Length: 263
Image 1 (cartoon, rainbow, N blue to C red):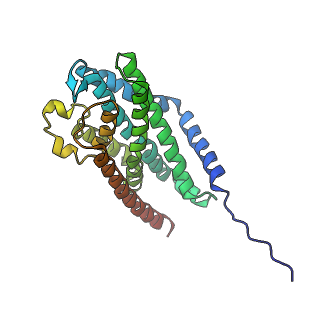
Image 2 (cartoon, rainbow, N blue to C red):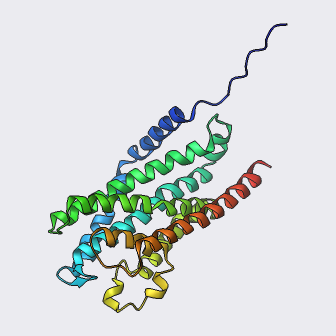
Image 3 (cartoon, one colour):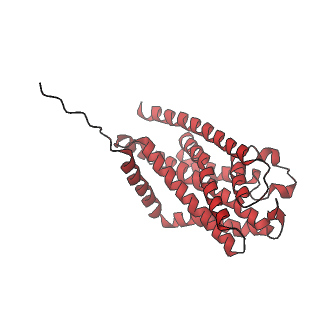
C-alpha cells in the first residue's frame, strides 16, 4: 500500500503572517497622514495649552509642568490605545470587513495582535513627542526617566486595548466615536488629568482610585518622580484586574457578534 502524504496545515506560520499583518496595519495608518499626524500631536498641543498653567507650582513634590507632562501623556495613551484599537474594530464592523477576514486564511489572533502592536508603537511615539515637547519648554527630566515614562505608559495602556475591543463589539459602529470622546473627557476629569488631585486636597481621590486612567497616570507620575497615593504594586495589580475584566467582556461581545453574523 502506498503511504498517504501527510496533511499540511492550510494556514501559514504565525510569525511571518503576523509580520505582514503588522506592516499592513502600519500602511493603513500611513495612508491617512493627516489623521495620523493629528492623533500624535494633539496630546502635545493640549499639554501646551492646559498643562503649563501649573508651571512653577509644587504638585506632588515636583514642578507642576513636569507633573502635567506625565498626566497628559497618560491621557494620550488612553486615547491612542482606545481609538486605534477599538476604533479599528468598529470600522471593520461598519464596513463589514470582519466578514471578509472570516473568509481569509488568517488567524483572528494575528489580526488583533497586529493591531495591538501598531497601537503600542503609536503610543510610544506619542509619549515621546509629549516628552520632547516638555523638554523643549524647560522640563527637567533625565533620559532614564523619559525612557521609563514611555515604557510604563505603553505597557500600562494594554488594559485599554481590551476596553477598546469590548466597546468596538458592544456599541454600534456609528456611535463608537461619541462613546470614546465621552469616556475620554469623563475619565480625564475624574482621574485628575486636567486638574491635579493634590491641588484640590484630594477631593476626587476616592473616585479616582476606581478609574483605570488614574492608575495609568500613577505609573507616569512615579516615573517622573512625583508622589503617588498608591504603591506601584497596587497600581499594577489594579491594571491587571481591569485587563482581565475587559478581556472577558470583550470575548463575550465578540462571541455574540460572531453568532449574530454567521449563524
